[in-house]
Image (cartoon, rainbow, N blue to C red; front, top):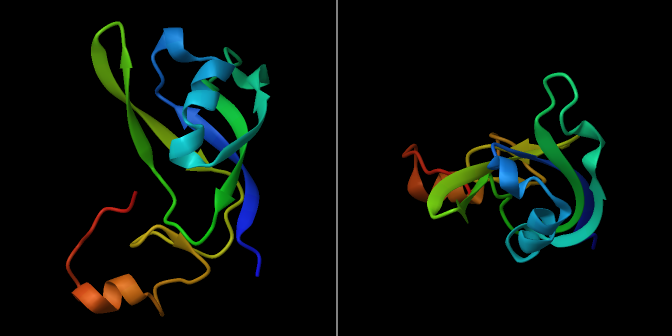
Length: 115
């Protein structure tokens, strides 16, 4: 079965000093294996995000945000995945939608935040 899939990932809201390939590599264990860095979006029009290609284990829920520390201040960077196909926002997993979700069936209609 297909377990690891490469995705382009946008990293938003990073503190100015952290917009670098180093941040992308530091997030590797949290997101997935780092493959490539695309810094061409930085500072262009309204594109204030980093773009990286990562190899993700699709059996695990996708992450939406990560707390980072910069100059003693905690903040969150947010992740947006490009060109996701079948994805369920409730549990954060790929491969199914609202009509079939083990996590949603187990807890009923209570809300949980993915990632």
